[in-house]
Image (tube, rainbow, N blue to C red; front, side, top):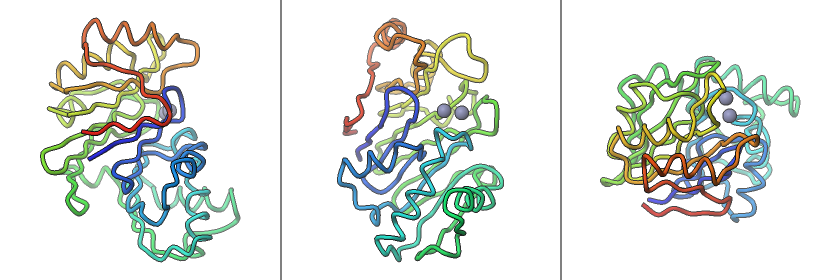
Length: 235
Ligand SMILES: [Zn+2]
Ligand SMILES: [Zn+2]
C-alpha cells in the first residue's frame, strides 16, 4: 500500500494506491494531473467535512471524469447530507447535477457506518473529530498495512482508537491557539498513544514555521516528518 499526502500546508489531499482519494480541495485535480493519475482508476473518494479546502475540487474532478467518458461507478463517503451537498457543489460550479454525470455516484454517509465498512480488500474505519462542523477521520487497512488520516480538528478518543498501530498517521497540525484544530504536539501525542509507526504533519497554518512545528512533534514522537507535495510514502 502507498499513500501520497499532497500538501504540507492547507489543501490536504491523499491518494492511496492510485485508487482511494481522501479529500478533494481546489488544488487536488491539478496535483492528480501532475502525477499523471488516470481519473478512471479512482474508485472511492472520502470527504472528511464540508470546508472548501477539502471539497471544492470535487466538482472539477467529477466533470473531468465525465469529459474522459468515465463509466465506472464512483463511491463517495462523507458527512451527513452528502448527496445534497454534492448536488449543491455541481449546481454552483457548473449548473449540473449528479444525473448529468456519465457514471453512477454511490454515496455513503459516514455517521451511518459506526462499525466501519469495506471497499474491496480495504477496511475503512471512521471517527468524529472536534472541529467547527461535523468532521471525520478515516483509517484504512489492507493486508496488515494501515494508514490513518485525521483530517481537521482536535483528535478524540475515537480517533486514538481507529488510529491504533497505524504504519502511517497523517495528522492535521494547524497549530496551538486555534479552537477546533489540532497542533504538532497534539498530533505527536496521538501518534504516541495510538502506537503509530510514523507521523506526517499536514495542514500547518501558514502563520507557523513548519520546521519549528516539526521539532515540537519530534520531541514527543521521533518518527515525525513534513511531507512535500510529490512525496509517496510506501507502507
Ligand atoms: Zn475544516
Ligand atoms: Zn481544512
